Length: 354
Image 1 (tube, rainbow, N blue to C red):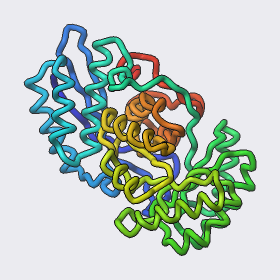
Image 2 (cartoon, rainbow, N blue to C red; image 1 turned 180 degrees about the vertical axis):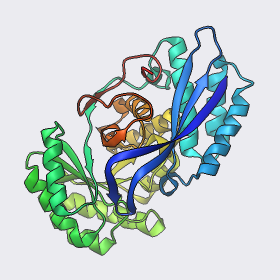
Image 3 (cartoon, rainbow, N blue to C red; image 1 turned 90 degrees about the horizontal axis):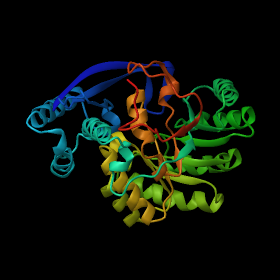
């Protein structure tokens, strides 16, 4: 097999603001894996460069892809499961780069077997359809209201607010609820609050009808303990309000750690954090056994990664897969979905039509 890649810059329609900073361009690596068979089968994957979330750099991603290229050059497509196990069991870190290769292997193998990639997981992920939320960046309250109205008019009934500036977050919550009175609202503080700030904002969260509150605190030992306690406080204040671990959880090991601490909230899983379809399926299975609600999130990424995420929406309760709607241009060449309701792709592999 032959692995190659190219770096691209993803640009959002508007600057994307959250508690940790504002960006309009997001680097990513589009990966192709050639089977070198008579059919000329090609698998696709994507590695998102986001050091804050995955700890990777451009150097580390490119070094991992170079290692995978050399390893795969001596293997046949029939050997894909053995290499996948080697990559996930014997290699530490590099989650987004591993995810790109994981996607490409599942895409290639699925096409060769004429089955969707989800069918290759053990156990196979079921087909499903869920409505994605649409994210509103951490902007001024009047902009929150304008965007909320626009997204509802475009057919989105689930909205997610980026919070993390306690001095203005109450106004953002009120603006969103007033502008979209029938929408389901979620929120993401992106580690931007202290415990005291979260407690002070709890009545506003309840009044706005927030369902999922992602990662209010910094993902360290103290922040995780605070999140465990605040999850209990939030559930007592409003049974429908779930604190959702995001930056604090990447894979099975993090879920075990948080459950051992007594965390009773939800988990936001991302393929780029977990390392691919197989590790995410394992993490989802463990969380399911514990009775924890699950949301599948995404990075700012192209439709290639979006199709990879849609392979496992049958494993979760809610999805935040809005990246294609945020992009000004998608270098994959695929158009954005036609509606907020996303289905598991029906085609073989990742279901791409490149």
